[in-house]
Picture 1: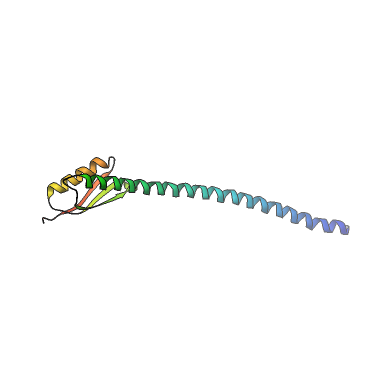
Picture 2: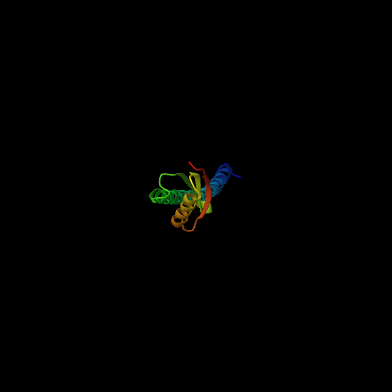
Length: 123
């Protein structure tokens, strides 16, 4: 074997290995980009759910404040978008006020379950 051929064989082997490594790296980059796209979409959906929940909380709270029987009561409204649940909590002076608060919440949270955690305590 000539000296020239002996020098070319290792060089050819090195080039072949480098080409394979580049192919693997390109495939890895494609997979990483695909994973990043999926995670971004998931994060966007979660942010959208949080915004929807906050909007529903604001809608119910505004309706409670606008209602003449319920206005001024210390009623907390919490919304869980993932379970489509609106929870009312706090203290009200009578069963009538509690019933009205639940009715207002149900009217303004269509498609949601309203959970009553209100406590009746007369003044």
